[in-house]
Length: 152
Image (cartoon, rainbow, N blue to C red; front, top):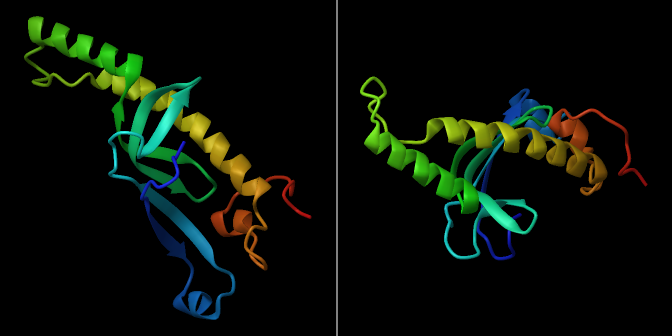
């Protein structure tokens, strides 16, 4: 969820040659990086489970084909509480070999649950809105294959 009024930054890495870009033909996007550093109040990019925020995303990478990888995020709600509890346990039972108190196992677990859901949502969104820009097939530009549900 991205609430209205949230500032986001989108960076596109294009595939192909400069001639393709200059002519506006055969434009292909290799990847997109979306970032939001407004992680306060009701601003930011949030992942919800039901009505509860479980994570605030700071940077998301979308590869050609629609695969989503979360670059940076912070836990919220129950996940944040669990992360705090894990950190406390690590303080009490510090593993000297890791020399870290970050609940990395929980972060990786949350990330592994969020990324496939976001990937599916991105692919469905692009397919449903593939003709949102007249004369451009967004699914083709982003390398996403599937039915042309968004065609009119």
